[in-house]
Amino acid sequence: MGVEVICLGELLIDFVSLDRDVSLIESSGFKRAPGGAPANVAAGVAKLGVRSGFIGKVGDDPFGHYLKKVLDEIQVDTSHLVFDTYARTSLAFIAEKSDGTKDCMFYRNPGADMLLVPGEIAGDYFKDAKIFHFGSISLGSDKSKQATLRALEYAEKYNLLISYDPNLRLSLWGDPELAKREINSGFEYAQVVKISAEEFEFITGCKTAEECVDYILKKGSKLVVVTLGGDGCYYSDGKTSGYLKGIPVKVLETTGAGDAFVGGLLSGLLKRINKGAPRVLEVDQELIEVFGFANGAGALACTKMGAIPSLPTTPEVEAFLREC
Image 1 (tube, rainbow, N blue to C red):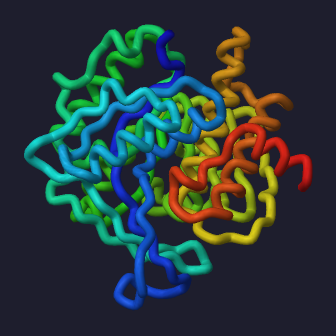
Image 2 (image 1 turned 90 degrees about the horizontal axis):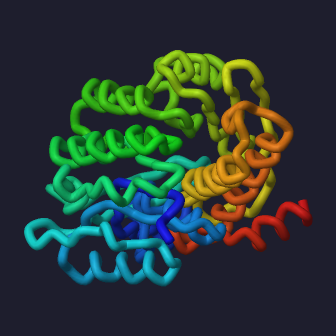
């Protein structure tokens, strides 16, 4: 049986500071945690009971094999994860402040994820899938960009729902204008977009969530969700829009929150696809409940350290929402 959701992009190790409200220089130590936004989403939907697969490249090194083991244990299909003998697995060091801002440093020059090439994308893998999800980081180097575009060709050929997270990590780009241009190019392919309040002004030039959503919808997307941290989210399909309030939690670390939200959103959209809903992306009460579930998944992810380790299961989210 094939996978239902395919995610493509970076898979790396996050080293998360053990201290809060300090810089990387001031951190006393770090905890190793598997991460990388598209890989987090693949893990997130798998933990929610969805058959998911991940396409990407890691180094043929201890960190790369550790990451494969982590995904395998969560039952993410790694048959299209490639090991590179030249480049090392990418690493990220993260120190987080109470206001949600992060001090980040990446070891990726080049990282193995940057070297994924079109020939490593297998079209047959897409035939039975329902959703393809990608992020902007893989658009930042020529090889991985071409591989991403090849995957998008297959996703369009087999009529997959395409989801995009314009994950902004300016330190990986060097040139802010290049970053803005390439990140914006991803909107042209996606029907579903999740973007955060912290990044939309730089990416879109918009000052409010409402303006941001209108901007992205005009690029061709059908459903846009702006995550607002502890304040919840704002959603629109171009006709129906609204805010959904957040769920207060004691925040330990927010690295996996946005990806947990995307996992919850895609798992809910998949159910609508599988039911044969003719208007999968049109906002109705059922879809608003999906946003609420995604909010719950994102909130729960804030209560644990690391990205993949923080991602909740469906029973955990349901129990959490019942208690709220």
